[in-house]
Length: 199
Picture 1 (cartoon, rainbow, N blue to C red):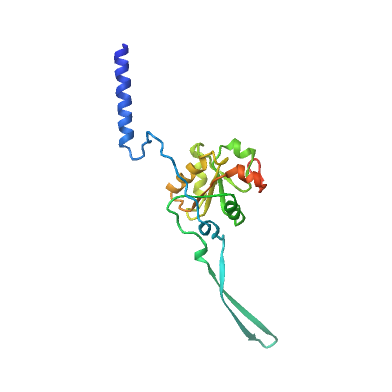
Picture 2: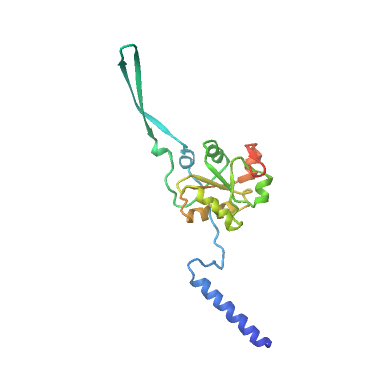
């Protein structure tokens, strides 16, 4: 095969690949679009309560039996539906103070870094779903409800893995995703709870 034929085959292959990518709805853009983070409002990010309830009424009734008198108290409890944020239109970014508030409320944190970085140290209780990892890590998603509030994070402000993972989760139907802008570096700087290894 001469160089002219080889060059023709390469040119045709590249052309077919470019055309296929252009026509494919999931094609890769030729120029990466800059992702602009929209930060959550104070109301959005701090209104979450894991099991928020409110007491609607208390009804006390005296019950007399032949041997004793007791008081029966009935408490009517109602979940506070306004305390949990509804679905977002896209993942929202949060900073350290809001991330820690959500952490204290038991919200699930997802570390988007590679397993070796996760093992060196991570937010206590966080699970590892590396954005650049293989598909076996995605199996963890089957155990997470799509209604659950999630926070993704990575190394810090220069790392975009948490943004990419947050966007991917949102596309998979997880409509309550926060992106912790500042991530691991801000968390360690504040001295908040951490773990090492697969804890």
